[in-house]
Image 1: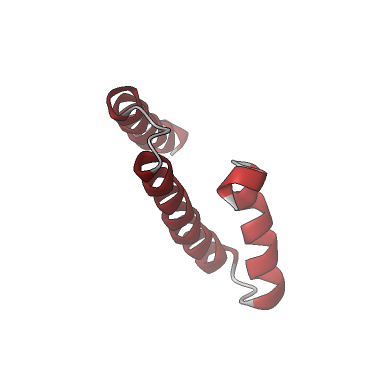
Image 2: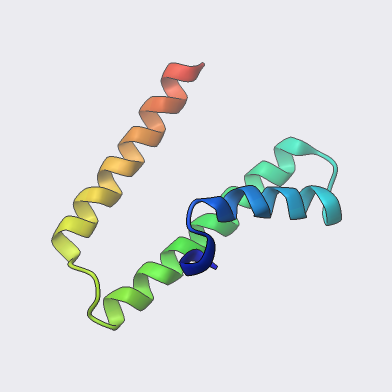
Length: 77
């Protein structure tokens, strides 16, 4: 799914979860985040196994993404 939709997959997952799983937006959003993280992790493992990902820059980008997400959520409060 990551190769096809990229970041848009999270929006599609949320819509699907709200339609079929639960009507609670907070529960659906949490589940969406877990599923999207698992999807992206499996995709990264696949790229590393195939030798298509440089670990150094990839780790820097992952850490920057984690920090940016945390900082963004903190500032949005």
